[in-house]
Length: 129
Image 1: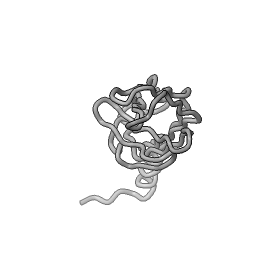
Image 2: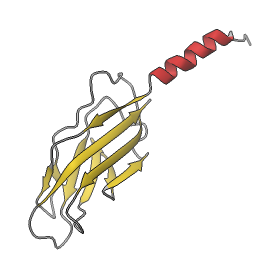
Image 3: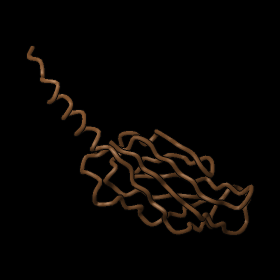
Image 4: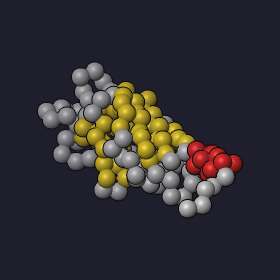
């Protein structure tokens, strides 16, 4: 087996590190009004600088909800969804999903809740490699 020169190996590692990154989405407030049907956000579009073929490694989020009224909220790409079970958090459950494709938030009111609620201050950070 032929050994690679150290300089070439360093370039390969640097190139791989350069392909990693993150993008941020701060969509408008999401109004959730139904218990039995999803309210869906507009697409959360990644910036054009995300390379084709890049994969999500981790998702970080935060949002503001009225006290005691945490909706059933999910971050989805196609049929793949990750529950966002707190007003802020980190998940690796989207690992391997396409980082260059749009995501959407899906939410439902908590059972028994009457009247719509609005989630504000939404921020998603998508890490990719």
